[in-house]
Amino acid sequence: MSRGIHASPCSYQWKNFMTNSTEIWVVDDDSSIRWVIEKALSGEDIPSKTFECADDLLAALETHTPKAIISDIRMPGMDGLALLEELKTIIPDVPVIITTAHSDLDSAVTSYESGAFEYLPKPFDIDEMLAVASRALAHTSKLPGNSNTLDSGAKEIIGNAPAMQEVFRAIGRLSQSAITVLITGQSGSGKELVARALHRHSPRAHAPFVALNMAAVPKDLMESELFGHEKGSFTGAAGKREGRFEQASGGTLFLDEIGDMPHDTQTRLLRVLAEAEFYRVGGTSAIRTDVRVIAATHQDLRALVAKGAFREDLYHRLNVIGINVPRLSDRRDDIPLLLNHFLSKAASELGVATKEVSPQVRDFLSALDWPGNVRQLENTCRWLTVMAAGNLILMNDLPPELQMNQDAEQKRSISWEKQLSDWVRAKLLAGETQVLKQAMPQIESIMMDAALEHTAGKKAEAAELLGWGRNTLTRKLSQHS
Image (tube, rainbow, N blue to C red; front, top):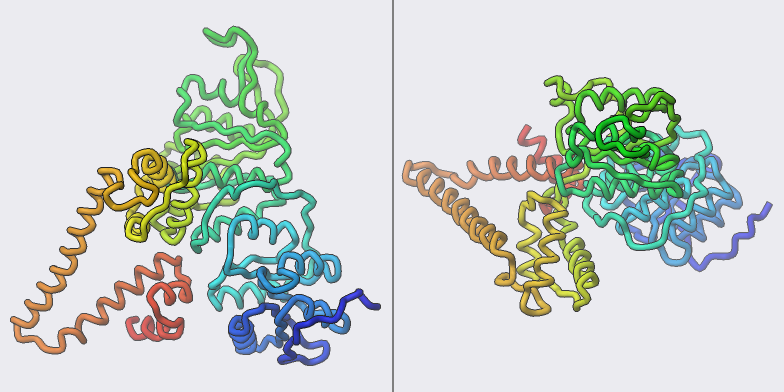
């Protein structure tokens, strides 16, 4: 029976195609990507078929059905998300893996909401792609759809770095869930933004999002803040007051800095999470609650548990799903994007023209450690919007504390070069030969360790950072092992 697919202007490629045996179809307008995926699948004895555009894949569905599909998002004609929507109507049981080089929170969430089996930002690790493909082939059940629509407006979270893609993917996977989540990360890294995104892309998006910072509430008022109180329950309680659990009814309660919650309050919170009911302070009637709890902390809760400062059972109750928000220094590629965003935001707030940064300033700011993370960068952009003399921000326009960092960075650079020079001279004075041959393995080992740590062990990304091919990195790792 015809599905009404029109003729396509693209000429698709029939590769490794055997009737009723092709398992994975790949659609990507980039021939090199198609070739890499096809070769990787072939190496695992997985038959594949590749297409240059979505229309050709849809046409091929007239006569055959694959076991899984890998699709790019941005393609001429029908894009990957439109294709995904079409496929969920035509072949809802076939898992679709979405890939893209232009990854952001909206595309990740939309992919999952539209029924994607998995979302892989480019450049992806071949081993990871093969693992996802294997899981897709084993997948037989129909993926649930999502009737919620995304709220229009600006992106909540900005980031193209691999570490942020993991956060986006987690938010996407949880978009149909009301499960408890524990968000970890340094102060200023954007934990509340992640919590708000989890709420906004959840079935509870229509209900309130209520935030409470544990570190900002006096201990003797903590229970009243959370659970409310009855009139006369303590000195100053002049009337009945609803707590945050009641205010967030049907929605999400975000408990920031949960590690600062007093032990007694931890016990009451555990009971609420277990029994879905609580009592106001001074109250005698149980109140049922329907609230999703998202907690966040910059502290190591496991260490607090080991010291007895945090209840272990509460930790496990909160840490059903964990999301770690990376430090800004672990996502340096995002700093130019964030600079543009925050400078534009500050200009809009102040009613002035948006300022730009010179290439030297951009590179310098991208290399800083940013101990205050995204919040520090945002405040710096506000300062520069007010204080910089011209529309183009130069090195002399930077705040004094950052200029001190510049001096320190220059000293560290000089010190590093001088130390290497001194080491070489000492070796030569000692009569040693083949000094470069002796130093290169150590230098390569240090570089590889740093790159793999930065990419969380993903070899393809580490190789790209080092300026090598993936095979070169694998070979050198073998040589150094």
